[in-house]
Amino acid sequence: GQNIDQPTEMTATEGAIVQINCTYQTSGFNGLFWYQQHAGEAPTFLSYNVLDGLEEKGRFSSFLSRSKGYSYLLLKELQMKDSASYLCAVRDSNYQLIWGAGTKLIIKP
Amino acid sequence: IAGITQAPTSQILAAGRRMTLRCTQDMRHNAMYWYRQDLGLGLRLIHYSNTAGTTGKGEVPDGYSVSRANTDDFPLTLASAVPSQTSVYFCASSPGLVSDTQYFGPGTRLTVL
Image 1: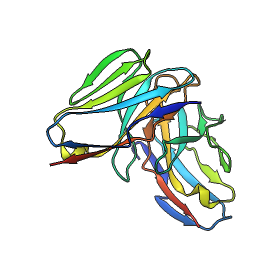
Image 2: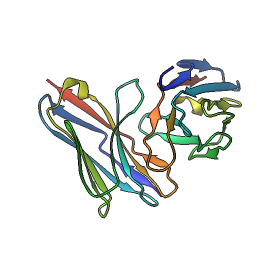
Image 3: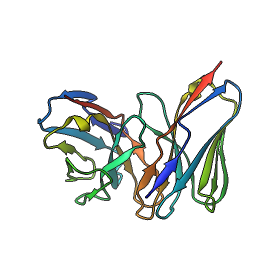
Image 4: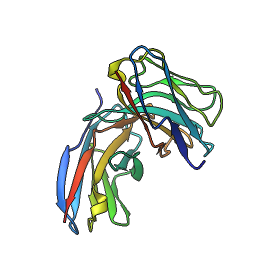
């Protein structure tokens, strides 16, 4: 079967750095997405990785290792508004997105 | 309209009733999707449409139907609602199927009693 694993919840301090991990086992791989979802709102796109390595976009970076079936989202200089759920999704061989359950990130002052 | 809109925002429905959730996008995207989101689970694909006039089944299609008469609209119908269909429903669209980011509507919170 297909599976995306993420930690259920993480806590970090304002101004710090946090790394959210995602491991996957899917039938085929055609890219990995990270989305942010604030409570009661729609998911919004953060990043996309299809090749191994690090993609940096401002305070957010995303890393992919296809051989290990592993990705992480790195958030720097945390702000209170970063409190949200972070969703990892993999596009499989049928070009459908398989979603993890999400990681709820709590930022404390 | 800018982006994707969904209606209604929320709905309480008696079991056995028929319900249509509406989704409209103004971005001229070819592909559209319906997901449900339940606590502790990832988003699950119900149905999708790669282009107007075509539809396909996702991971959890039973009890749901869709149509895609034109590019902009992708309604989701529950023919006879059951309590297990209580969920938050998100409509999404993407320019195409391959390597394209999906953009989400604001969601519909549906409660079936």
